[in-house]
Length: 327
Image (cartoon, rainbow, N blue to C red):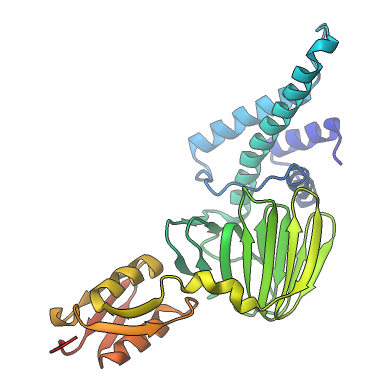
């Protein structure tokens, strides 16, 4: 546990830009023990707003840590209020570190892509890894993975299918828990207001750890549930595929029009879909998917049903084919 004086020293070094990687990790670990997570709503690095905000937060935190108010008489009848004040102080300190470490994350990775949506999204990461991000969740990652580790941060739930790279591990940060992989597919559920973080493996092997120890090394159809309040974990055997039911919620098409499917794919894959022949819009399609497929894999199936063709050009998709005489 970092004592108050050492924490002050670390913050002063951080402010001066002299923190070593080990000292930055100490700050992160200290904040993690408060049950925090780095923010996804990070400021643009180098902006005036970011610099001012960080400076103000540092000043407030350092003043609070510098010492107790002197000469103030403590009455027993106010003990509860004192406890409340201490609790509020910890919350404030946690909030400040939350933003300070966000700036550190930006310093390490540069600009960070942040995805948050009210519907499930399919994301291709810079290394080609696939992610299905559940509605209401957030994922942050750099525009390019550099260095020896590929790192992302998750708040909520997501399915990961990681591209193997023996030279660079892949790490998902979810509050106090880190999940490390080399090449595998798995599901992580880590909502900020929930007491538990759950990791379920569908293929390959992952290592799950908190800031103190390795919690579990998981292989196919194994799961670990970590209680963030008690710092306790439980490992169990599961049918991991059942943990992915949410990924297919919007991807079961029971005789719906090509036009409606285009709207669904637009939201999920962030693409614009056009029809070369307007008569295709009303063709009915019946198909089902796991929800983890790429856009091309989905288009192969739905276009094949109607003997249509497609062309992907960046974020634009053009579908062509004969119109439907009957649905």
